[in-house]
Length: 122
Image 1 (cartoon, one colour):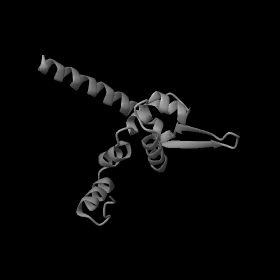
Image 2: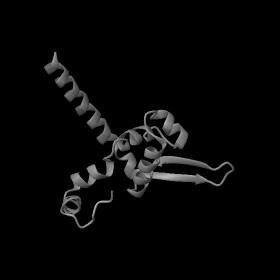
Image 3: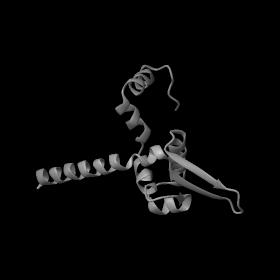
Image 4: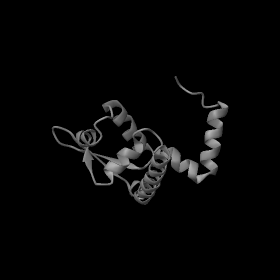
């Protein structure tokens, strides 16, 4: 179901993303598999099949949609080689590579929260 671009919710999202760099950044990397794809691509160029192997629970359709979204957002380059059979590789752009320290901090923070929650549960 398509969301009306004139809805209050869409207007609020647009306002926040235009006026709050943090919200804009989060919108670029939001999505169930977006951050995972970026983490895998931090290791270097990969073909679609290699990405699928690295993320075995993502469907082909979802991986394709997220790669297109990352490309549209300027975080991933799609490189097509004029060969037979066609070869396509994906890599992070310079802006995508700048996510590395952010991802590392998210990893550290996530581990701290997981550990803290585990202590509460035990």
